[in-house]
Length: 356
Image (tube, rainbow, N blue to C red; front, side, top):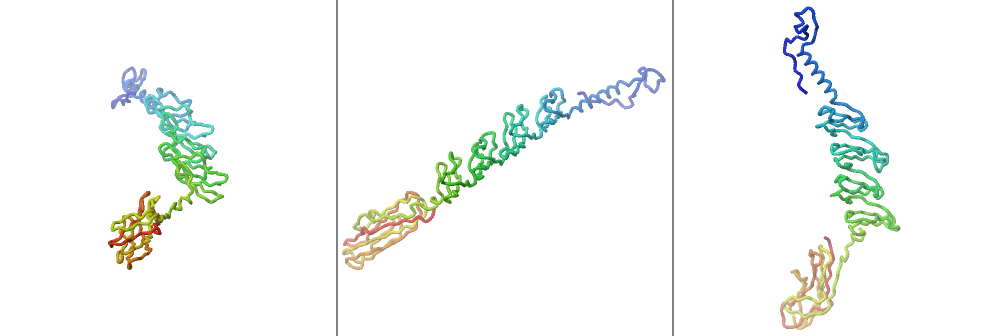
């Protein structure tokens, strides 16, 4: 619309027969053209500006092209505000409230309604309160924390906000979080009986860590991702103590050699207390030290032969850190002499798991 131009200073307001009104005593009195144009354009501008804000029902919203650019329209039945932007009504603010059952969310929204907000007012605790935003093509739920039964849990997809939490009211209020479009168990313990078995069926990898406490047997189970694990049994170290007996005697030389049968393989990583029992015997090796140890260690069990024929049982222990599958072997030797020295079959090895 052209700007309103104020008439030049000293322009007469009225005329009579085309002459300034002040110099003519009679004749047709008229408004001067300059002032007539000023009042007309000012009136048009006032009328047009009066249409910048209006309101009514959504169904009564005027065609955007009939309204000035930038005009606002308040939809009284939806409690939202639209603005005419370039001949199109564009959502700008407001939240509509209604029920989800029946679903009162508008079904006629499109790209220009992006950002439209809807809040639920249902009295059903599984539905209220929840919040949604129209993306321009679909409803996106933005409720960050909500709850309901496991069966009522919504799909974890683009319509559910990432990082949102869902509390399953029928499973002991266990909590799941939407992570990368998947519901993943986060916290909580479900309770129930083991007989009949009330542990939930259908769990998978995303339920890893799910806890279940039995009210009849007082046990706690943890879902591993593929099976239930009894936590009490898991807390007790399996194969925490191992032992092996020598299967044959050996004649000692001046080099370390393995004692047959005195070998163990540890099933788990951790720190172990290893004990070795060496049953030494000597014939015609007086004064010769006989040594036994755990392979790779430098602490020895020592027997000093004091007579031509002697025998003794000597023990030693070691504290070692091992990886799962590591082997433990007892070895023995003599330090010299020309007689015969032995390790007998009463020798043995024991390994006890201490800590991770």
